Image (cartoon, rainbow, N blue to C red):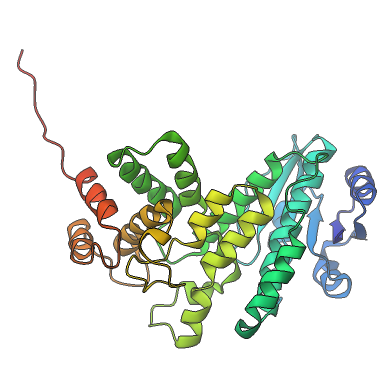
Length: 343
């Protein structure tokens, strides 16, 4: 199980939570004074912080980004009478749940957050030369990745969405990158007449495609100068990291595979060297949708106009990007004729 840190000075808030977590086998340390939270993190080394506090801002005002690597996610537990907003900080993955709640929902959320952090830290611990050992160890770690029957799937899926949203808001694009990529992917899918069975995994992968960027330094994601060789190598790990995170939370292999390959190019010059029809069609579509939005909404490079991005994609259709997907996006973005009916 996991090492957890329970934060809160109200026994009425924390007592039942500690009991639920303890019954699931977690080791739970407690801290009542918020000013001692960061010190308790250093001494207890928790994998997740569970904050059962009425004043969320008191926690968010702390210097939360002082740890090296991925700091423990914070799960806020609110009461339905609390005036709680949906918090976001760049330094920490934050989730929230409102009480009262079924104990299985709390346990599922905690387990999902633990899994995300373990995948990220496990990947960071293994150098590139030990990738085979890392893959074997990760497979062992996630062998039981499907939630136990006592834990519903919902919390795992919600945490996946929360992680993807955190990654999106830390990235070097205009806010809403994942939603726009999903819209472009839907346009392409519609033009290509994809079945619902093929379109649904594509759209879910589009919403989650950059989930692996949670493991990357925010300074690098927003760097306006060209990335160095080491930074580029690190950036190219994010599809693999994303697929690993998704597999830790969900059994949908089609979505994980689409995420893994969304930076592959049809000529084999992408991140991992897959090419042509060896790249899943969902990934080929996603690569076009993602690249178009990246080129037109970048905050770290001069963005291209819509026509400029489409022109570049047409030049490289069939080499860098899937020709059918480029043609489909071009057709979908064509101005529609405007007519005024005569009375």
